Image (cartoon, rainbow, N blue to C red; front, side, top):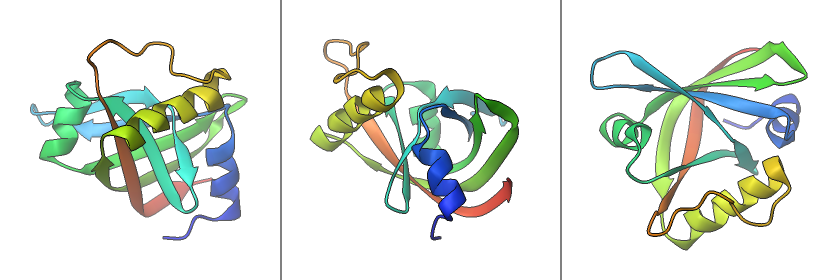
Length: 130
């Protein structure tokens, strides 16, 4: 799905956050605030390996992502789709790019020793809102 100009602008804005919805083992939704970005028409986000959402996405790659602008929180876009993963150096570099976007820092400041990152590439199949 090609991203519209409006959606690209929303994803490029450092005042826009995502709420990531995954399916927990209980069947209930787990929703987490996330930094989000795009690379061309690819939507990306990142997590630390070992977190609950990572395990949930391994079990079921379907997600719902709601984007909202901190300056206009009632103006939102919801996307549904699936994710694929990238690990290694690309995932580690990706979290640093997100830190630059959201914190204006060259490196992710909360990196724990021995922790490894995972980069998600989100492919939306449905969008609503905005």
